[in-house]
Amino acid sequence: MTKIQILGSGCDKCKKLAANAKLAAEQLNLPCEMEKVENINQITAFGVMMTPALVVNGKVVSSGKVLTPGEIAGFLATPVCDCGGQCTSSETKMTESPCCCKTPAESTVPCCGTGGSEKKSACCCNGSGKKKFMTILLLLFIMASIGFMVIKRIKGRSSVTPAVRTEQTTPAVSQKKDPLTVYYFHGNQRSMTCNKMEQLTRQAVEEKYAEELASGKIVFRSVNVEEPVNEHFIKNFGLTGQSVVVSGNGRFEKFDSVWDLIREPEKFLSYIQGGIKKMMEKSLPK
View 1: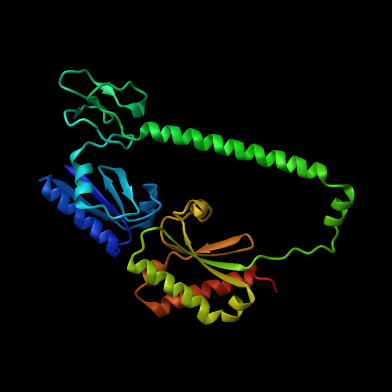
View 2: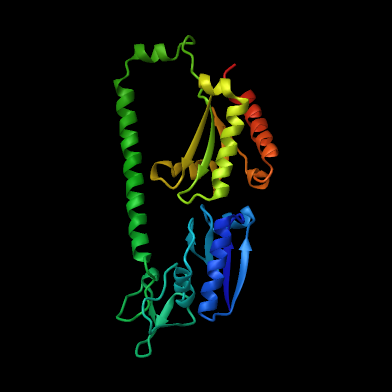
C-alpha cells in the first residue's frame, strides 16, 4: 500500500494539497494511507524547509507548492527510487532493489543515481546526474570563495602600516551597535495565513515601538528566503518555514509560537512585543 504524507501547519494550501493527493489516488484506484504531519520537529526531520510538502513512501517529492492532482498522480503511478528520481520507461518494473529496474528482455540495470551504466529502456533516476554535477560546482565555488577571501585578507594586512594598526587599537575608537531587526520570513507561495502573520508582526512593531522605528533603533524586514540572495537566512536561523525572528548584535530569538496564536491577534501582538522588549534590554545601545 502506498503511504502519502502531507507536511505542513494545517494552512489552506496544506489542505488543498491533501485534497489533491486524495483525488489523484482515487483517479488511479490506488490503495493508499494518508497522513497529515503538522509537528515542526517531524517536518524538520524530513529536511523540508518550505511547506506544504508531499512525501510518497518516505520520499519527499515536492515542497513549497501545491501540486495538481495530475502532477501527484505522476509520482503515485511511477516508482520512486531511493535517489529521488523515477523510472523513465513505462515498460520497466521495480526489482527487489529500490533503486534498480529491469525490462522484460534485459537483466537488472542499476540506475544512474548509483553509478551504474544506463541502457535503452532501462531505469534511470531522473536528475541524479544533474544533482551530482551541481554539487561539484557548488564545492568548487565554495573553495574558490575561501581562497579569494584568504588572499584578500593577506593583502589587506600587508598594506596596513604600523601607524594605522596603532590608531585602530586605541581605546578612543568606539564600535557602533547594530539596530534590532524584526524579520518576517516567507517563501514564494503566500497564503492568507502567511499574509496575516506578516501583518500582525508589522502591527506589533509599529504600535509599540514607533519611536524606535523612526530613530532607526529597530528595523522591520519582510524577507523571501527562496530568493538566492536571502537563502543564507535559512541556515543562520535554522528556518523550516514561515517564521518571526528578532536579531541584534550577535543575538537572535525565534518566535515559533506565532503559528499557535494566529487566530488570537491580541495574544499574538503581546507575544511579539514582549519578545522585542527582552531583546532590546540585551541588544540595543543604552
